Image (tube, rainbow, N blue to C red; front, side):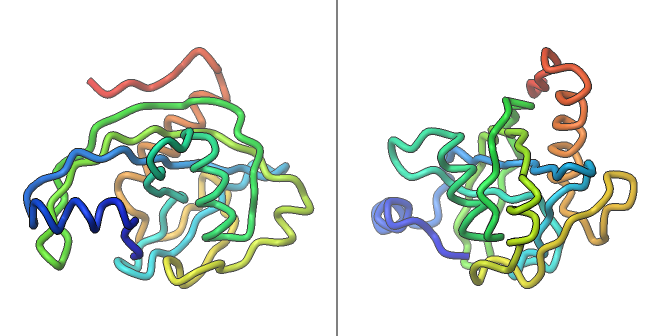
Length: 163
């Protein structure tokens, strides 16, 4: 997975020590209620689109950019479904970090759905799936993000905040 330059610069100074990083995930639905997922090239798991915002980049702009880069889809962001802190992750190179994830809900037009494709090296496949028939293996964090997005769609006041 490509690491943003600002993180590489930090890593030169702190090595593999833990970093607290912002993350943005976007649960994108089409007009039929299907979810957009990508199969991650690093783990082989299916997952919602996610990424790290550039310094100063707004979460919704990050979600649109990441989705366009990874899937060819530039969705319309509808709202905030959740904010949660994950567990510490250790990457294969030894880098350690914890993400504070901002989960957004978005819609894709039929034209955007037709444009869906693998956009970069972060995914090996992308596709649209009914919420009750998600592919396996599904990244565990994506389960919670999908649940939060579906809860938000049912009731836009139902923002999931980590406990």
